[in-house]
Length: 63
Image (cartoon, rainbow, N blue to C red; front, side, top):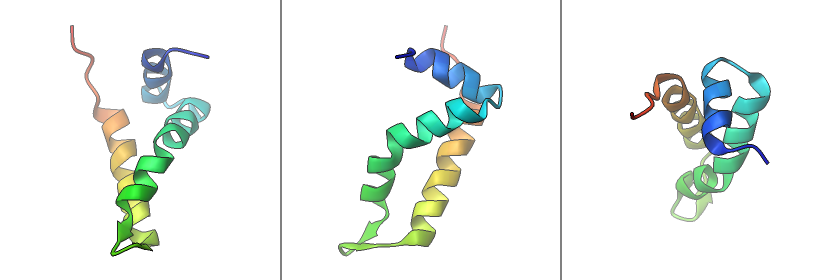
């Protein structure tokens, strides 16, 4: 399996497969945080996914 840093780099370069891999990695956390009073909120899930995609795009590697 590829190192996370390499997957993140590829995702920043708009590699669709790498982006999908990261979203899949974080899906359980996104689902957990999209629960409101124990009920899954699809809109919140979509907003959280969009925020994850923004984080990928704006991530700056620490030197």
